[in-house]
Length: 446
Image (cartoon, rainbow, N blue to C red):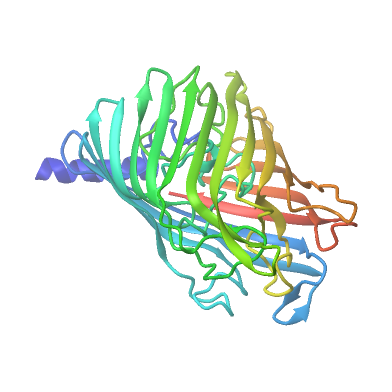
């Protein structure tokens, strides 16, 4: 017992005061807040805590309302994420993961009541168990999980993005048939040589669309069909960990990674729409949801002496949600009135195609002081959805540009990000206006 207590103290001391270079560049973080449960550390509990806070200026879309009053510009502070994650192994063959928290709280949204931002719902993000069947080749698990299909970014970690945040269309069913990009079901994952795979069969959550139906495809509230998804990526160079489902956005030069991947999600009868008949009636048509993605990821150290590195990611999505489906989303929206295109909302997800790319360059170690690291980046998305047609019948693309820089004070464990976004205001599709959005993010995770 005495030795066990000493090892626990040593483990806590390691996570607080020292350790090897881990967690994408941190020299202080070490093994993290990891408490050994036996003398050799093979049984343990690890805890991860993080907050992401946004301070933002936003030029709102036309007609936006905040608390019932027109507001052209908003300066606000919001809590993008506040999370707690536990995982534990009592044996190399068994793993338990529990992850909960809140997202997207500002003064007017994110609250437990629709009318305010107070007391947001604390809910489970992940709660699953996993069993190692055969080495690293096959692991099986079940529960509320994040072992997703479609793309690398559909499985993205929120702790180590390259750009300030995800583009959101990487989670195409978010908060419709899933629970914040998670579903309840069974999954299999593993490595076959250099091929890393993950597959899942899930139940779709009951949608919040009630019985609303129109000639445009929407989520079918009567859907009881299973959701099938998978993602496969070939890792040509350094191999990435798949202990947890969260895939790294940038390694800050600590790994040499080049992967090519492809994935899918399919849910039969997930959508429905109303189709008028010639004699004045109508019929209900159910449609399948079929989503596909192909991508490539590069993270490469350039000069080990100066610490320079590049990170690049590109993905193509082909989404079929049924007839003319499109969904507008505004991250941590600063407006609570004015329709679907209020605040900073942009047509984000729908039937059509999306191209997305991002790239960043980690400057030399002595560029920004003795300890801080600077990483400028740029990201661009180009979405062409069937529903976005102007009065001439031409499809209008939703194009969003992000340019920014990460200042790493202690790797990803403590960083500041400044991001400029240029986004389209689709209030008048025949005369698009582009609106600026400037965000300063402070993030710490332990």
